[in-house]
Amino acid sequence: MDRTERFYKIEMLIRSRGSVRFDTLLQELEVSPATLKRDLAYLRERLGAPIEYDAFSRGYRFAQEGWRDTKHELPGMWLSEHELHALLTLHQMLAGLDEGQLLARHLQPMAERLQAMLGLDEKEAKQLQRRVKLISTARRRASTAHFETVCSAVLLNQRLAVRYRKRATGQLEERDLSPQRLVHYRHAWYLDAWCHRSEGLRRFALDAIEGAQAQADAKAHRLPLKTLEAELDRGYGIFAGGTEQWAELRFEPEAAAWVAQEEWHPKQEAVREPDGALRLRLPYVDATELTMDLLRHAGQVTVLAPPALQAQFAQRLRAAVARLG
Image 1 (cartoon, one colour):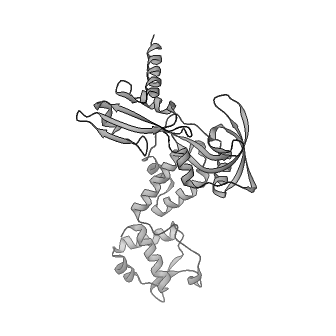
Image 2 (cartoon, helix red, strand yellow; image 1 turned 120 degrees about the vertical axis):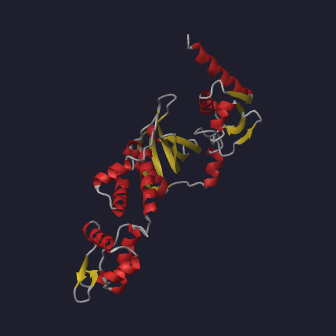
Image 3 (spheres, helix red, strand yellow; image 1 turned 180 degrees about the vertical axis):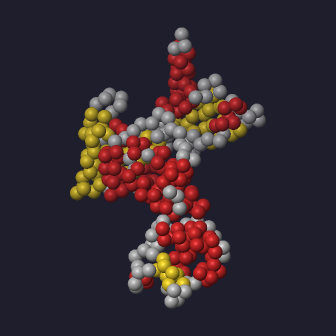
């Protein structure tokens, strides 16, 4: 039994019995007298448990009159120390994904309660957090105000009026949206929504939204998740819509050792060849992002099909060589 479990058992024993003798606690917890004294001191001093020794009953009880009705509660749920460590690590991962401190003020209270349950002071907590590090590159930061507005609209099923700047033209447009879901992809946030102007599903980058206002009195047009997945998740990467095509690729053995461990698309088909090479077949609707990822393996990958993807990849390679001068 770890320390966190002992805390909950001490609390439970005192609540259920009213007063519990020291030797009874020792027997129930199966710890040494020194350990039990430390646990009782920690419950009083760090977790605010109103535990006192009652000379009349020669046992420990809650100090307030009417202790059965006391509102004191140990923080959190019944979790083991390993589970608390896992949750604290997960919190660090969420914080690493929190571009622009979008969720920090909401996540911090949870982190503080986890630290309290583990018995960490502020210095120990900071040291422990530094043991989990996320490295991110090419981050795109979204506005905190807009993120919270969009997130609430998704969860509350409210329509949104947004000002959206198209990257290709730089044009600022007004859009009336029924938000469907939030998507986090390669360090950036996107909103999948039904656009009432174009009467179709569209994907919007949150960092390109320059204004967002929820329409609390207008219920969003909610689509089934299966419809979203069929429409927006068919292709490779973040690009959505368009005609589905299948790319056939062959990676040389050196690159195949890495690519074989990666999932490029949930529907991909991979076959290892006798010489260690890898044939990979996957769907896409727009070649832009797929071509960029193939360039990471330039010299180690061959595009077998379709011809249009072959031509686009070859063109990018020739342009790259030309720039070498």
